[in-house]
Length: 169
Image 1 (cartoon, rainbow, N blue to C red):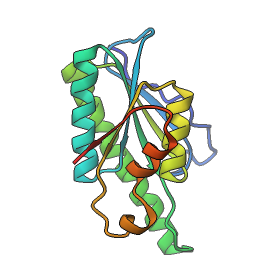
Image 2 (image 1 turned 45 degrees about the vertical axis):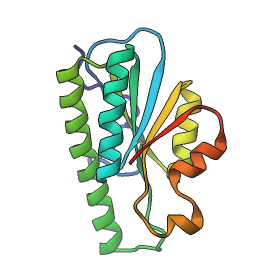
Image 3 (image 1 turned 180 degrees about the horizontal axis):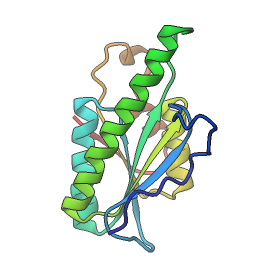
């Protein structure tokens, strides 16, 4: 099994991690080539159920799992302490999700690449899926009432139409 390998994180003078810098970590057994399942996680119950579903699917099919955490900045313009709080929260959430994903990858012997990327969740997931040539995208169903108007991440990914999208309730 390979350990974590931070690949996308540039060195900084003060060695303080940034919430919006991309990172890549690899967990579980080595994976040479084959099919890929992408799952988006954000810490919500539905996203974690989607991750569990994707783990099971990847394990049964012998696929690699790409777990994407999208660090999206708040829609509000935050400055000062509010921005610092959002930054710390994103870092903490990413670290917690990474630890959970690592544990599951090692327990289930599923090759996993955990990526943290910045941006709009739909755009970031679409680009990640296209970049890694994902065969399937798995996301959790939205529980937000606002998504009935603007469209959920799942609905917008389905409309992209590049790959099959599984929406886990």
